[in-house]
Amino acid sequence: MDDFDIPIFKKAYDLYRTFYSYRDGIAKQDRHTIWQRCENVALDILEGILLASQTYKSEKLPILEKMSLKLNFLRVFLRLMKEVKTIDNKKYTTLERLVDEIGRMLGGWIRSIKTRQRECPPNDGHSCYETEGGLPGRGKADIVVAVVVPVVVDVHAVGVEPDEDSVAARNHILPAAVRGTGTRGLPSLKESMSSHS
Image (cartoon, rainbow, N blue to C red; front, side, top):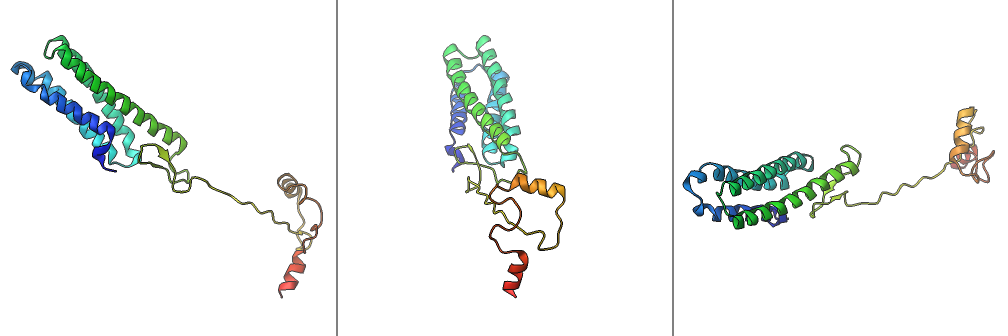
């Protein structure tokens, strides 16, 4: 999947383009102070989203949480610019709407990763990965089938005396049709061995 097609990246890209388009209308005294600071934060967010999209799943969460914090800084700076009249209400509303959309997308991405980490903790024996849609998944085989075949051994035939624990375990684990004494129609180990020799 092309990283430039990720919806949150497109939205962050639009945020910076919109921000940049307002630059000429900003007073020189503000352009090199709070405006420059906001522009840098917007670029950091764009860079962080692109970085997170290209890193391993275990490294995404810290990057995304840092971008969430930067997005909150940008919200505060935008509000401050509106209050000190660096930008008008219309520009503020447009920028704030884009920031809110990015915030919702970013929050969803973070929640998805946290959910996947709860469902697929590291080293749990599964190959967890993030699917193209950003949703958690497992390897190509989502269903694991285990087949348990009970093996009946005539312990008396092989000269082993079972202790109380092994008898209790056998009676607990094996179904009633298999439990009991004798081989229930199955050849003993001695018979099996003699038929192969």
